[in-house]
Amino acid sequence: MTEKELARYEVIENLINGKIDGTEASKQVCLSIRQTKRLKASVKKDGAKGVIHKNRGKPSNRRIDDEKMGKAKKLLKEKYADFGPSFAGEKLEELHGIKISKETLRTIMTAEKLWKPKERRQSKNRHEWRARKDNYGEMEQFDGSYHHWMEDRAGEMCLLISIDDAEGKITHARFDYNEGVKAVSSFWMEYFDKNGMPGKIYLDKFSTYKINHKNAVDNSEMMTQFERMMNQVGVELITAHSPEAKGRVERVFGTLQDRMVKEMRLAGVKTIVEANEFLKTYIPKFNKKFAVIPNKKADLHKKVSEELKVKLPQIFSIQNTRKVNNDYTVMFRNSYYQLDLYEQQTSIYKKDVVVMEEHLNGEIKIRLKNHYLKYSVLPERPKKQCEVNLAAITPRKQSGWKPPIDHPWRSSFLVNKSSNIFRKI
Image (cartoon, rainbow, N blue to C red; front, side, top):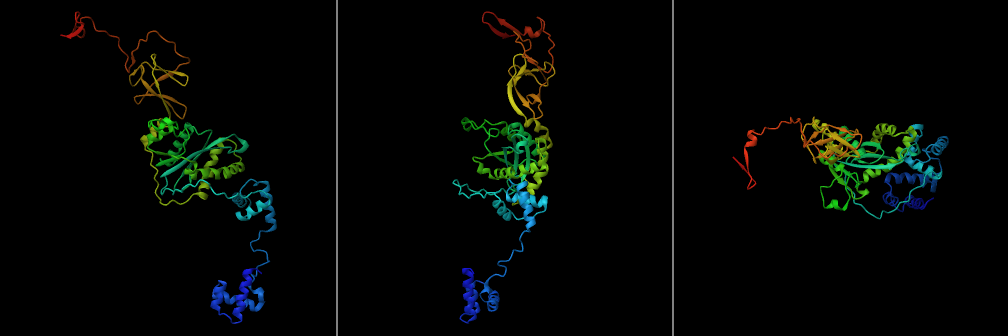
């Protein structure tokens, strides 16, 4: 008997002997009067054994069958040795029909040395918790994670994901080889087409998203290609000063690196194309399990207008400025682009500044005054000429006509040779 049971037995003994009444006894044993009466009857019948629970020493009604336990242990060792207790329990129930609680699995896996409980450590740096946004689409947390997502079946890849701050669900995900401007631009082009434009994007200070040079503090006009893109479409960017500031997307990466890597192993995913196809079916299941209900039901995504859809390929292109050379060529990325001399929609002069657009489909366009110029790519560097005949490329070809000597245009001015001053008649 335990100390608690001995104390209860003494109280019930006093109740039976009439030293205390039932109300006082119920207060001392911290039970209801009805339960105290039952305990009194049990002690009268069985003596001191009456205060001991009847199931003590008997096997639990919830005890797992030995055959089922043996099968679970075998599967854990053969297939799920590197799985966590929660994830292993889900797979045992989903694929093998064996339902075991994660607490029991944790005990089994610890005993079989398949799982080592983590030590709880007090964090030295305390971060203030930030409440979620109220509405879906109000703010997206965005980041990329480099990892061996397909283990030894492929090299390191980058997973780009956006997490809605209100619901905590993955709104879009895409595998790519890096976190460069082209990969990120393709991601958000797909996001806009799928969901619309969010109000804000919360991200880190990676070089793709922010210029981190010390001079950028004093010069507010310095911005990255991605900042320019989002500024043109009207989406606000917020840069975090620490990983903990955007902890929701960081925690999702931790969960995916544990769970999704093993899911792709079970599904036999081997290439980046297969991985992106796998995301289409996996992300809805993930959101169903881990997403939360937002405080409000509004969707604050802004619809992409038809006019903006036409401009998106231009906005999400990598843009750089170049000058037109004296021979009306433009040098860009070690190639020379010869501008067409006659069929242009606007006049072009030497030293004009043009915008070179690298579109996501690989096409390069040259823009001047909101007009795209016609050009041809030269096979080699053009040779220098001593004289350049054209003063400018104009939309119309010049006729070459010159006014005669007695033309009124020529006779409208006289020159005073002594004073070298032009005088109008």
